[in-house]
Image (cartoon, rainbow, N blue to C red; front, side):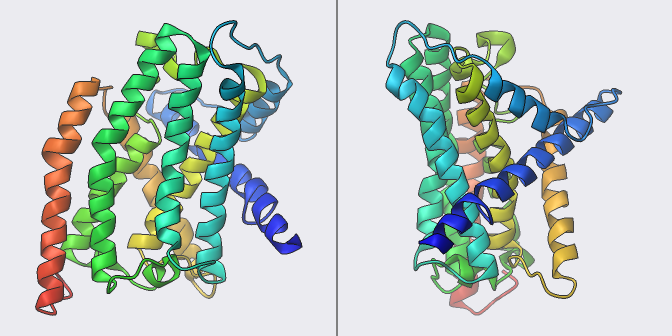
Length: 310
């Protein structure tokens, strides 16, 4: 029990993930600023922002469900922390349990559900609009995301253990590379980054589900998103790029792979305008879902005829 508490709360859980997540948000903000010909924030600015929000007064909406309103960011933070913990334990010490991939997939859905429930619980009509958009976005990107992961499972010999998936490198094949591209775009939507930030949409609905949040609950939501920005690239590295190896050149390779994925996410964020929710749904269902299905069929053919490159 002591080891489990240490793993969840300190390393590789909450504190470890929070620190690296906030550093990742600094990289995002710094690169964004340089693209816009600005200086950008100092290194510790995300930490200052988090601590400042934690010290602010928490205002609860007069209408709506206050218990659900406060509980949503707490559950969201708990879920993303558990995702990061499972991913790192699978890479460093072996899978904590059989089928941990399925658990991670479910846990990755919880932050979006918490955002929906928190927005609905606030009783604000703009938050409700943002929550409804987030709900539609989930229905759009989850299908191609799951199909792309099915490609990885198929190419690994039907393994559903993160430890087993981390020992393979499906991106070296055509189907694996196509599935990785689909997953990267789905990750962009999971993070709520442009062009898929339709739920927040500050210029349209004033931050959407976040509109009534302040103080510590808002800080927890922001910290959850920061940990996601750290955990989702680690997830992609685990399932597509052969996992994390901390021996020899493994640390350097992990840093390079993580920086490359983070850079792609930031570039997509800064080179695309926000699209409407109907455009987002159409993009995922009309283009990414067929692409994911094509990757799955190529992987199936490759497995049937022992064509590893396919």
